[in-house]
Length: 531
Figure (cartoon, rainbow, N blue to C red):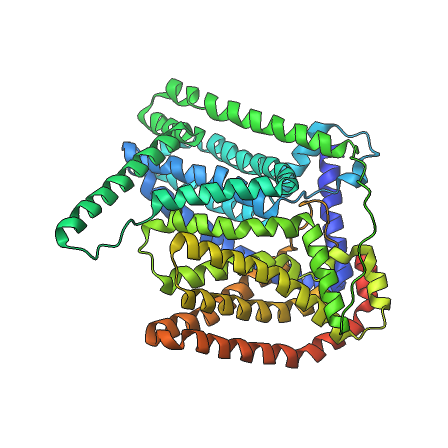
């Protein structure tokens, strides 16, 4: 067996062994069966949907606007998927530390990492949709079938290579969080200045019309700028190559692939160099510091909450989470600015989106404790107080993010205090409901999380599906209540959301003894998985 196949086989076997250890062998088989059936239906839907869109584009491939639209879609799959996967996931699939003692080439490790990354949820979903898109296009334009595999390979490799590159750079970004926050604040301000809807048209119609004309001209200028950016990307050249192949110009079609292949090679070389630096085993000596000041507390849960909050703030992933309020505002003032701004949907959507950041911590509340979970479980503290402490630490972490988002929306989006307070209560409801679920998953499928890195912090596939499903359910339930109150009686928005928050908190506390009992039964499992 070649080293490449051996690495992938070892990775697959380790993943299966971890699932069998956490769920039992029968549970792992049941989970694999359920996930396999669900994935088969999802894959069929993605391929059919992408194929239908590809058929529509392929039947009109000779038009320049179709080639531009196809290039934009390929850019979304390759560059968009790579950026999203690298920033939000940022995880290595293979355990590099375990392979340092083996005489493996960097090329073999890098290619194995790319292939293992394809099994992650986001790349796999995009790969299926992209495959359907290109197959549908090839069916509608048969002359392009010879180039379809090349375009598919280029796009997928760019997605995976960019994900590895961005994942490596994300660690350096977290180490320079202050600079990143300042840069993103400037970008958010510029985005809000460029994309803001302008002054309110409350004056006479004669003044409103020039303002509307200026807004239309500004949007058109931004559209022309975006079109020029898309035309400069290699995906536009790949889309044009398909149009040239359909026209029978094979020399031009093949020549257009020189640019995408050259950029792909550059991204792969940069990613391999970052990987070589990370796998070399060299590390900077940690800086010594004096002992922390002692602090007191009135209740054990308060002390545990402060301890967990400090653990979150010392982790790279916990600090990286404070970039998300700025990213949320940039999304609202950028891509979603074309929709009519209305606090009825912008404020709850912003806070619901921000609540997703905590899922990694909420569904694995003991992951950052790692070996320290032994000492944590030996403390003379009941399991309920332990879970309450985790809840308080997570609440402080999420509360600071919510406050940051509220201040940004107040300054840049001019949202009123009542919608913002209601949005914070909405986020609190989602947080409490999601944490109640996470108290069970944290003992059901614990896994260690890295403190000083963004790598290997992704959720398992099953927990990822559960996280997405529960997040969507709570956002729909509590977001619907927010929208109903804001639409029916704005004066009752804050009191109504406060009442809903109190009900969710009461339900959470009532379910806490059952979660504590589950923790008592799974203490050995926690020590085995984390210690």
